[in-house]
Amino acid sequence: MDPAAGADPEDPEERVGPEGAADPEAAAGAAERLGVRSRIRGLIRRPRLPVPTLRSRLALLAAVTVALAVAACATACWFIVRAQLVGSLDQSLRSNSRVDPSFVVGQLSSGQCSPADERAPNPFDATVQVVDRNGKSCVIVGSRVEVTPGDERVAEHRRDEAVHTARSKDGSGTDYRVLTTPVEGTDVAVSVARPLTETDRSLRNLALILALVGGTGVLAAAGAGVVLARAGLRPVDRLTGAVEHIARTEDLGVSIPAEGDDEIARLSRSFNSMTEALASSRELQQQLIADAGHELRTPLTSLRTNIELLVRAEESGRTLPAEDRRALLESVRAQMSELGALVGDLQELSREMPPGGGPVAGIALHEITERAAERVRLRSGGIAVVVRTEPWYVCGEPAALERAVVNLLDNAVKFSPDGGTVETELSGGTLRVRDHGPGVAEDELPYVFDRFWRSPSARSLPGSGLGLSIAARTARQAGGEVALEAARGGGTVAVLDLPGSPEPEPGPGPGPGPEAEPPPGARLQSEPGSEAEPGARPGPGAGPGPPPDRGAGPEA
Picture 1 (cartoon, one colour):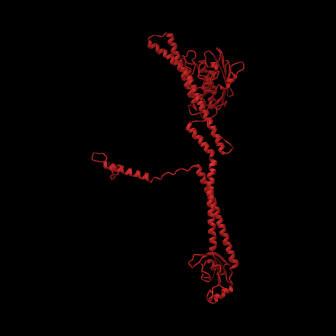
Picture 2 (cartoon, rainbow, N blue to C red; picture 1 turned 90 degrees about the vertical axis):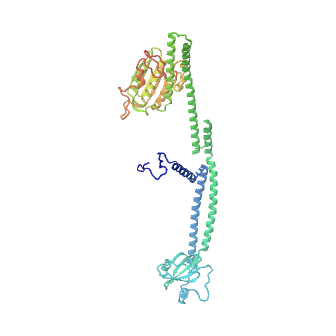
Picture 3 (cartoon, one colour; picture 1 turned 30 degrees about the vertical axis):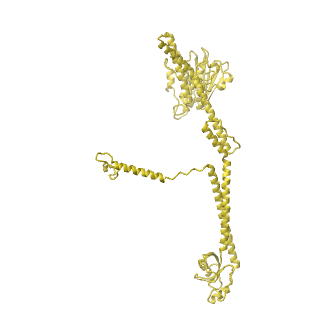
C-alpha cells in the first residue's frame, strides 16, 4: 500500500507480498498481539462486586447513622471534658502556685536560681523558672520548659499574665501547663508550670471508654437495623413473592393482605388493584377470542359447505342448474363479505387510536351525519332516513366518527319495519337516532354495548355484534358518550352526546368543509354496484353482499 495514501509502511499488518497479498507472517503476528492484548484485558478486568440486598443496605444505613452520631457525641464529650480539666488546672495554678517575689529577687541577687544547699520541695513535679524580657530563663524548681513570646511580654510588663501549654526541654517530651506572672520592681517574670500527665491519662481513659461504648452502640444498632429491616420489609417480601409467583405461574388470582394506611399498605392495595385489572383484561381478551371464534365459525361453515357443493359438482361431472349455481356463488360472496366485515371490526376495536395521528379539532358533526345518512340510504331497502341537523363542531377522528354514526343509523334501519322511517336529529351537540322497531327490553340495556353481545331475539339476524361497541369506543375517544333509550310510542332512541361548539374553533386542523372529499368508504357506498364497506348491506342496484354490521343489542 502506498504510504502517501495514509498507510504506515512500517506496520506489519500493512505489508504486502510480491503478489499483492498480505504477508502471512505479519498477519499472524498481528493476530497474536491482538490475542495477547485481549487476554491481558481479561486478566486486569476487575470482578464485579455483588450488589447488596435492600435489607443489608438498611441495616448498614442504620449502623452508619448510629456510628456517625456516636462519633460526633464522643468527640464533643472528649473536647468538653478536656476543656474542663485544663480549665481546672489553670484555676489551680492561679490559686495555689503563686511564688513570693522577694524569694525570686533574693535568688537572682545571689547569682543563681536554684538554692545552693537544698532543693525546694516539689510534690507535684511542678516547675518554677524565671524569664527575662530577652527570653532567657533559669529554673528555680523542676525542669526547664519552653519560653514563648507571651512570656517575654509579661516580663516586659506589657501583659498581666500568660497561660499556655509548653513542652519541657529535658528531652522527656512532657507537656506542661504554664502560668507566667510579672515580678514587680524587676524586668523578669516567673513561670509556674504543672505537667499535663494526669490530664492526658484521664483523657486517654475517657477516649477508650467512649470507643468501647460507641462500638457497642454501633453493633447494637446494626443488629437492631437487621431486625427492623426484616420486620419492615416483610410486606415487601410478600409482595415480591406474589410477583414472582405471578411471573412463574401467570396466576393473577393472588392478592396481598393490606392492613393500615401506611405506604406498604397502599402499595399492597395498588398491587391488588393492578392484578385485578390484569385479570379482568385477560378475561375480556379470552372472552373476545372465544366470541370472535364463535362468530367466525358460522360464515366459515357456510363457506365450506357451499364450496364443497361446487367442488363436488365439478368432480362428479354433473352440472348444477344455472339458478342454483348463481345462488351458491352469491351466498359465498355474501359470507366472504360478512367475514371481511367481522375481521375489519375486530381490527377497528383492537386499535387504541384510529390511524391519522389523533383527534382533529373543528370536525363538522352535522356534515358527517348528513354523509352517513346518504350512505345508509343506499342500502336501506326502502326505509326512509330523515335528517335534521344544526351546526356542531367537535374534536375527534373524522373517519371513526362517521363510522360510529353509520353504525347507529344501520342499527335503526335493521330493526325498522318495512316502509318505516328513521328519524335523525342533531341539536346542541346531541345526536338522536330513532327507529320504530320492537324496542329494547329493560334488562338488556346494560349489555347492548358489549362486544359480540346480541339479544336472543336478534341472533337470527345477520351482523357481528360489534357495531354499537365501536360506536361507544369512538364516543369515549371524542370525550362523549352514547346510550340507548326506549322511545315513546315504541322503538328505540340512540343518543350520541359529544362536546363541542356551534362555531368552529380557530386554529389548524379544521373539520371537513362542504367541499371536503368524503372518506374512501363513503365514496365507495355512493357508487351502485361497487363493493360496500365491510358489513354493509347492498341497496337497490348494488351487488349482493351481507347485511350491515351494526351493534350488539336487540337493535343491533
